[in-house]
Length: 221
Image (tube, rainbow, N blue to C red; front, side, top):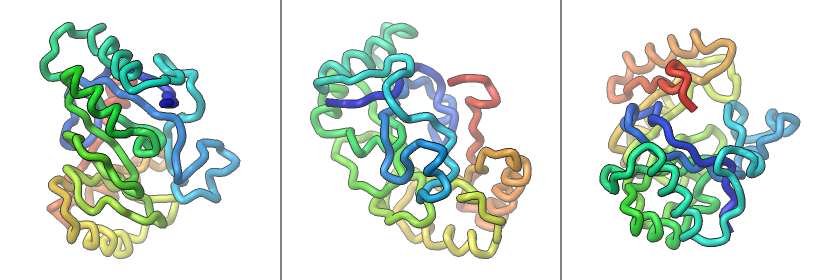
């Protein structure tokens, strides 16, 4: 059984795959925050801007088998393009590794999809994924120490930005086996200041590149 908040087609708005057409499948649930505002300040992740509770989104629901969910994803792709080439699905959440498994990966491979995932990196990933983006959260136990990209949000947990402290964290990530390094400003009422911080950090540590949430500027889902 897979519990899905929503399934929708859009453009990837962040990181190395920004601009690529994709179907997003958002799983319900996360291991670092309940998704309820009353729990936010006592959670490991306090800055999430996503609703991942329940199954009430477009395409959301309970899917009893991997084949059923894969078919729903393929149908969403077909709404915009009937081709079986360049099919791309991004699993997100919440935390998608709570639900993504070998059976679903194989079912999507049968539907000719490349499979990407956006994860907080605290759980092991199954084999067969084509793109892994790790977005670590301060205070969590990072398990995935290698991936196609790391996307680190600055600052975290509404802390007063301490540039030297953040740089020490970045240096630790740089020692891990990530292929692409991205910094992304935390979205909040102070997002302009956060963006400036991210830009300054990229200048200080040029292995890192700036990730912009393009979909928000383009009013895409």
